[in-house]
Image 1 (spheres, rainbow, N blue to C red):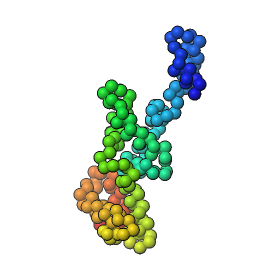
Image 2 (cartoon, rainbow, N blue to C red; image 1 turned 30 degrees about the vertical axis):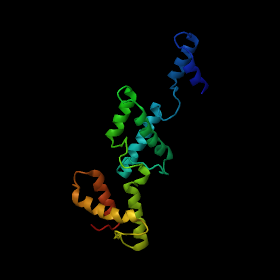
Image 3 (spheres, rainbow, N blue to C red; image 1 turned 90 degrees about the vertical axis):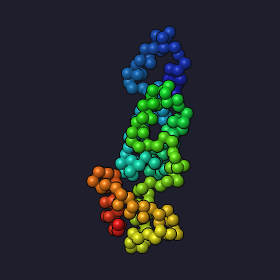
Image 4 (cartoon, one colour; image 1 turned 45 degrees about the vertical axis):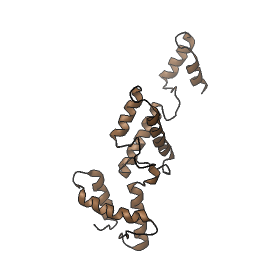
Length: 186
């Protein structure tokens, strides 16, 4: 923190000693911003994690309570906060970042409330597996009392199965295969 503070406080043009020191540190890969959400290294790492999350879950709606990677869960929330605060036309770095996020399907402004209220496909699938383990089948009643949302999710999956082109949509093709593997009946 001390070197970062010196870097911010000193005029690099006026002091050749500090100018040389700063150049030496930069040559070693020193990051003047630290490792917060806004620096490039951290941003790229979290973005990669988000892409992996999407690959595994089919969406970018990381729950605020996502226990597998709390840093990613916090970063997702921070990105939405930055989106609200930054002037997208004036800040080229954030303009590029927001475009990258949108390109992978990340919702910068949630339309349906916090992500934690909308469990990922994987979470519902795991609930279905638990149901099957307890009941021996995947025929969840629509008005299932223990997990009401699971009761609504099952017919939704059947409708998606009928509506989606399984050859063109790789994410849904994978999901349908997972459902079939646990004995889901269409």
